Length: 453
Image (cartoon, rainbow, N blue to C red):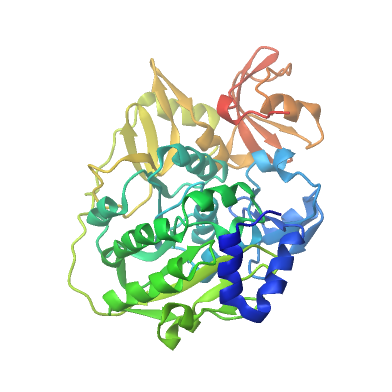
């Protein structure tokens, strides 16, 4: 494949005797992976029903390689949110950060959302996930993935880091900064990244990375951990960024990342830095089955000034009778917690949020649906957060049933049943809503999500 001469010369200078092995890796086929959504199905159960030949990714317990030619994005299980298709190396940052249930976690540069939904599986429905991206167009993909995965405890924001910082002083247990970068590590995966690099190399991104990372200090609790990652080889965007941050934040230390499963140490000499930079990790395409990544895990000392987060008072939203009637008529469960209404949209918000007035928020927890002319219309997000047993009326198709694809294409289904909202499922996993009217199921699958041949 074509590689810019400037890039080749730089990597030759950095890698020395390893350079030829590195260069030869670009002639290899790229590795492809998927990660099982354990909010919906266990790894063991997914293996039993998987239509794909899978091989374990060593640094991610629920991550698997799939073979070239298989098309997991063209399978009903993808539309049921049973897995996320992700480059294997990209699964490493969240695994190293290792959020646990009840943590408050920030994914600061989150779109398109692969790492956010990975965090959500580790939270197991507990705690709070704030997932943000500054690019409004990219946030649309982030929201889709949050809803597809059935994530209920996420707040989606579209803000600059310096503004978010003001609302979440000493709030987060874990922060992920998967920083925008020159993307050198993705050249083999996506050849269009080469043209992007030729336009914006490390000199463009390094100041942005410093600015983003510099806004994280005040948001992290004492003893909290921050994971900085990029998909570039550039020391200017990796070791140099971490050295700069540590030099200006004496209350942080670099935590050693275990160098197993092919991970290599950071390179202090490339940043004129201290040996502690060896505690960082690099994923090289000639050493692992994946693309290029850099990881740095930082921990905040148990000393800090007192910061005050303004929390919402416990206030109850009086639920409209239309929603209560919908639940009574269509669900086998009660939905409880803190309900919020914005522009006639109803949300079930996660517990423990601060006052967020003034932030550009696109989702506040689980989006349940919309009030329309004396009726409540359930959202697709509600369907994807339910289980087969939660709905009073269901239609369950086998994955090979032609009606599955018809439904995903938005077609009306000629199936009779009891009148009312019906949860359409594939092998017991929700795909979305339909409304039974006589001998037909009126399709409510979102137009923007529909299957395209």
